[in-house]
Length: 248
Image (cartoon, rainbow, N blue to C red; front, side, top):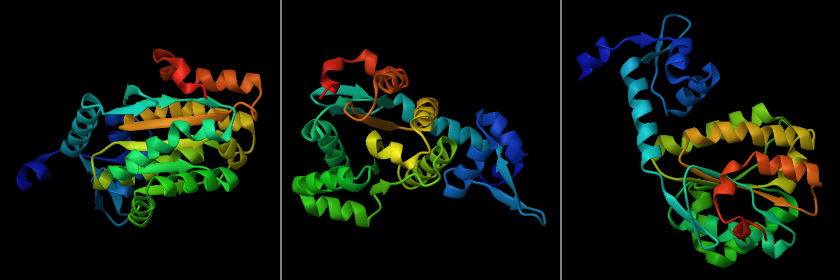
């Protein structure tokens, strides 16, 4: 087996990116997270990738996608990967779908991420604590429940941050990832609403590489109609479902 590995063609970062049809930045981040094995060569310690490892990576990705998990949201079964945008107008409505969704992920030891801040984050933590405080504490201590904040104020940086988080999660376990983004909080992390929505549009392309269920929640009292229309267009998965389930 070791001989076969040595005989496999070694590719540089640019060549590996062409094989997987992704950016060189993605290749470097997957390598840094341990998701994609690499060897270092020469004085400059440049990365080299075994062609066999790249093919194995493709096979693992295809396997995860073919064995798509099913999650339940408000009584509706949905197949992953999926990217949804529920709308709500009250605090209780904002928690109706997402707290059970996150609590289930915590119980199943699935990596779960929450993008929220301030009063919204407090509401979530209190609600999850009421569901099962011991499970929540174990998940936080074990790195299986992570509160995320986007610090750089732009979409490309936020995508890179999520890519690192997802890569690290999948490097240790092949499982479903759960993500909730409270967009009223998220918009405070970006330079403008337009930049936040461009991030949403980029995420719609990016997320399908991963076994993920992503819920981006919009408080209709805090976004104008044009922004909400653009947000809905960035979540086409929503329109294959009974949309009433996602209006709270």
